[in-house]
Image (cartoon, rainbow, N blue to C red; front, side, top):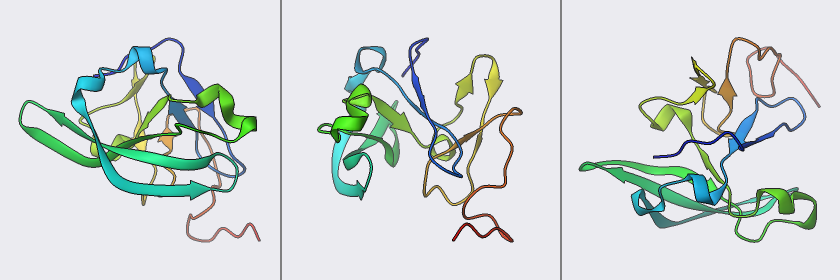
Amino acid sequence: MAQSTRAKRVLETSHRPVYYIPPQDVAHKYLRQTERTSFCEWKGQATYFTVEIDGRSAYNAAWCYIQPSPYFEAIKDHVAFYPSKMDACYVEDEMVSAQPGDFYGGWITKDVVGPFKGEPGTSFW
């Protein structure tokens, strides 16, 4: 559904990384835009998609920034996926784990260490 060697790894303070895949590396025929949107004070308004493949659906499983803020122009139209809603997501040959709670959609590999915002016992304020 998506495969890339050009994905952009975005790191925000105390968050796990999120990978944004260039639009030309995503099979858009499997994406159906939903009515959900969200707003990030840094990136702008996100648009969400349901992933539909072979009669299966993952509701609001992907998102992108169609008109990102100027600082995030590099991820314009790139698509990010919640790994918890997909059968599998990989970074190179390693299957990633999903960030608990799905709020940020972070991808966890063996090289990603915390603490991270939102984990029990952490305080970043």
